[in-house]
Each structure stands twice: as structure tokens, then as C-alpha cells.
Image 1 (cartoon, helix red, strand yellow):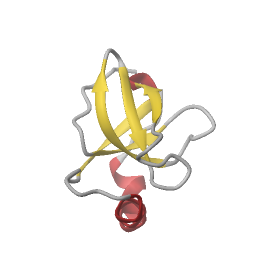
Image 2 (cartoon, rainbow, N blue to C red):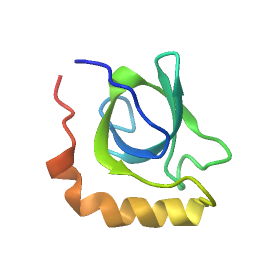
Image 3 (cartoon, rainbow, N blue to C red):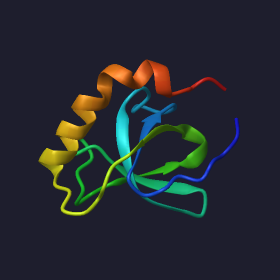
Length: 91
């Protein structure tokens, strides 16, 4: 599994852990870790740290300007039908 750079605002899918298969947005990325949130279980005020090896980036990047938990949930719900085409969570 190769580790790729995640840009802030990228929609990512968790490939390991209890969040496996869930969509998140990367808020920042440094030192092999990404800070991710989904607006529901992981709100913007208390995001989760996730190892870059355990997430898979998608082709979609959203703007973080003025992002709220409600807007984030809506973005991720709209993106959900395309997840099978754009993510690869295989080792």
C-alpha cells in the first residue's frame, strides 16, 4: 500500500479501523497523519487523527472556507453514490 499526499479538503475513505468504509474530509495532513472529520461522529471541533496508510483519497476536493458540520454532512451525503468508482481500499 503506498502512502500519498492528501491535500486539505480532499474527500477520503477510511480503509481500516472502526471507521472502515466511511467517508471523511481531510482538514490537514502532516507527519504521516491526516486530520479528518465527517460532521457527525467526528465534528470539525473535534476531528480524528488517522494514519495516511489507513485512508484512501478520492478525486474530489471541496473548499474548507466557511465549512460547517451541516455543510460537511451534506457534501458527504451527495458524494456517497460515487464511492465505489473512485476509492480503492485494497491492500
